[in-house]
Image 1: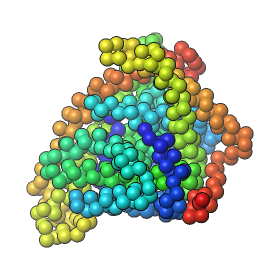
Image 2: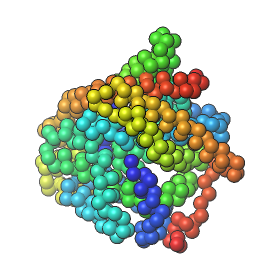
Image 3: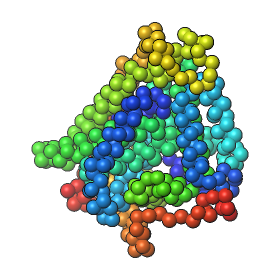
Image 4: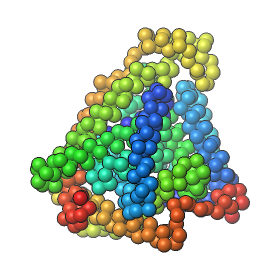
Length: 216
Length: 240
């Protein structure tokens, strides 16, 4: 899970894609995904991927890291691609390239746009309540990451995961997740109460300048 | 494994549009409850479980092609209405990173919602019968994962008749009609393809999903029962 890393790239980058208007970026990403869905030729999918990769390079994003993150969905798509082998090798590659194309598009969007800007823009279309839930979830992921770092040490001290001791390993794993959930609930609750005390009314306000061309 | 890890453009349009409509319908039904509790502790609770699910679903066990969902734990604690919203949020976030297509978010949310809601009701019933939380947790998780996997397979089975048209293999039979990059199929074209091309190997797909999944369900059942026992021990009120 590289959400924290993508978030860092989105907030620290200064390229033209980072400064591009968020609404247009979202629309452009959706159009690109639509094209990837409709395209049925390996060559054209490769051209789209080439275009996406050139955007990654032009945005001065770490290419290898972005490429590795985009490979993750392929693990599950492989099962489906394998079952479709009867249709010919071409469709095996089309399935994999489609997955790679859509994941790269979305990773490019999230690594060049800070998430408050994305949620604030989506707030113009979706109900504020839903945007609040998305915002809180996204924030909770980072809260969990910080707790997870502390739990990892305790987990290892208890023996961690050992193939020779499956029962103990599963028990350790379950306790670690149980603690993560409880600590996460408390921290998330505290974060939400903090927001409410500061006047949060279920609407995410954002600095327009921060999310557009004028961003410095 | 129980939800559909299909990329965009594989299932027929009517099927994934139906998924979105059904999900919107469900969320609309429960909108009153969401509005009533919008400033309650439910939002941070939902957000935390959505985050836990996003993280657990991102930790794939590579040799098993499986990831843990933790949907049953979330369903039990959040309750049916809030869990449906939670599964939508989780799927949309996962889809934004390519884990399942954007178009199948509606269907995936329905499958995971079924998993959590079934788990919730089964756990409530089994807790009274079996008395032990760990057993109730294991059985309800295993059964709800099994049923939701069949629901996911059913969706793929419904869509498989249209899979060949989604793939558009027919252009090889009529090359003169398909010189463009985006091939818009005609009715005649589609009929021809259905008759003469090999079908998507659903039995192979089902075998792989059930084969890898069965190991995963046991694993997830054990982990869920461990988590529920821990939560019950440390904070008993949370499971009520």
